[in-house]
Image (tube, rainbow, N blue to C red; front, side, top):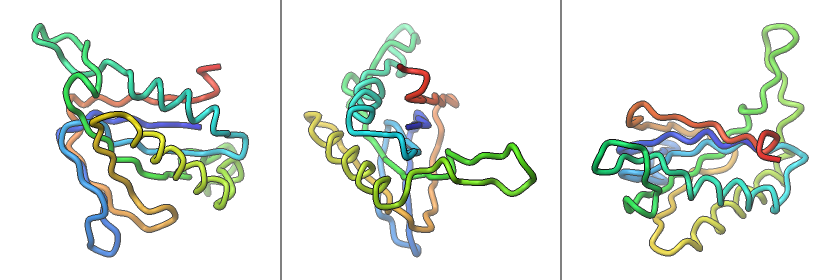
Length: 150
């Protein structure tokens, strides 16, 4: 599982010109799921993401978490995070999770994030052609990869 976490001042996602999800200060997260991923892996990734201290405190140090700043989440499914570009110029996506399984885990991640008190969680639409807009604050981008966390 891969999470590309971008600290944002605001972000939104549209499908067919309609805003599906929008946040102010928080994380816009691209979520890639492989066939090897499980709910247990998702739980570890979510816990790490929620506790990341990448917002600035009064001294300007990255010391505060989402909860500390009243941050919000925008969660977007992104199978292309598992693109394999080793051969040729056309990426292969054989390592991306099969749609039914990946969608089930994506929905699980959304529902699990919603269990955190006071955390606003917005979302994209699995498998849709989405248009994502954001203002990356910093810029600050972190990639969490479950293979590197084990």
